[in-house]
Image (cartoon, rainbow, N blue to C red; front, side):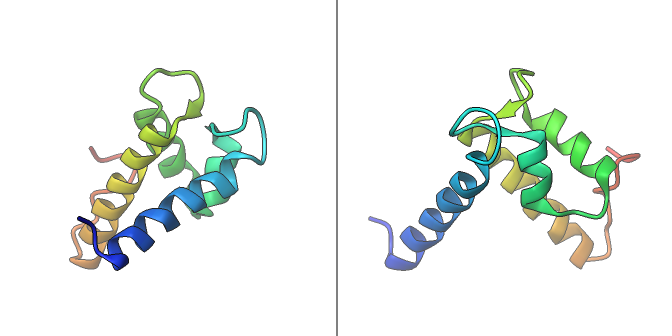
Length: 93
C-alpha cells in the first residue's frame, strides 16, 4: 500500500503531464512544443536529445509511459550535476 506522500507525489506527476499534454495536438499526448514548455530548460539541444530518446515509437508525441522515462532521465541528470558529474550535456552519452 502506498503512503499518502507517495500517492500525492504520483498524483502531482500525472497532473503536471496532463496540464501540458492538452496544450497542442491530441489530448493526453505531449508533443515537443508542450515538452519544451514543460521543462523550460535553457539548453534546447539537451531537450531535443531527451525528447528523441524517450519518444520510443518515433511518433513525435510522448505518451505518459514515455514521459515517465523523461522524469527518470531528468532526475538522474540532476543528481549527476549536484555531484559535479555533469554527463547530461548533449555531446556526451
